[in-house]
Image (cartoon, rainbow, N blue to C red; front, top):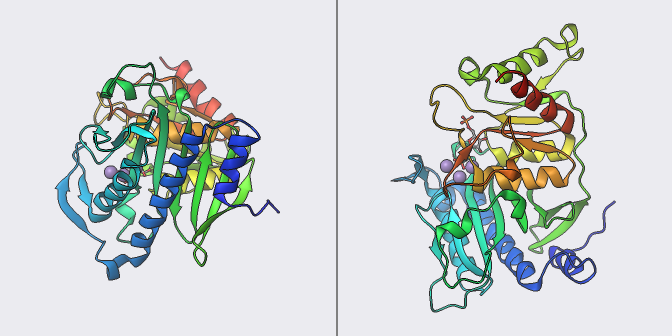
Length: 336
Ligand code: AHG
Ligand code: MN
Ligand code: MN
Ligand code: MN
């Protein structure tokens, strides 16, 4: 049974005993966790809180915004603006970066988030979440611009997500393994419920939107086709499939019991590298997965090595159990 310590105690330990995180970063993570608690309250109210349905607007990626996409974004911006730890924020739901207003002190960190992941599941009461990533502003130049955000994922100082599901769970890495915290609704505190999370190297479970099969590239088709052949095929074992359609929930399952998750490039839009966002979805999840012993690639290279060219960049994603991700990545190398 893991030590039942609070998120605050965990972070203080990381700061004091292990020297992993500066005080500023600790406070920043606490603010994000508090914002997630507020989002969880709105999510739980559902129809009673008038938070279901669309907001009637579109985001910069051309997606229709749900009310909760907008609410969650506002909660995160408001909570993080004034603390003095941040220089700027970037979000899936904001066209450009949000610089901390002049009336507040400017910190050295940059916060990136997908305020509400799994929007298509909000109205049907299926698990959704918030994903976040923290970078440090490089150099000592004054001011902050979009350029400051264009750092590869391996530079992340922290990353995590919160799942609003049967339980509200916060999963975090500050670069020293992965810890999971469960929200105790009676006391309002986050309690450590798992630490040193490890993803099994092998798995018999894959997650992919099979309805896109006819559009995939040959290496992805080959990999899934071999899984589907089961015991009689080259893999010699039967595979199971799961697809929640909320990346947070699918990745949470993989961190809990292993598996492989893929949202690959497909030929419908050949010039678009993938559906998922590099900075708000792929990078934070890749950091967590690697910290838990798994792998994350775009089929060709490690996600965390990709140097972004723009804020809302998209990417092909394959992540999870090490041997499976290595296998499907290897298939890409075989077919140029
Ligand atoms: P978001 O709700 O933040 O736009 O992200 C949705 C993403 C991701 O969570 C999920 O894995 C994927 O979209 C689901 O896509 P399909 O609807 O194509 O299955
Ligand atoms: Mn979206
Ligand atoms: Mn998302
Ligand atoms: Mn989203």
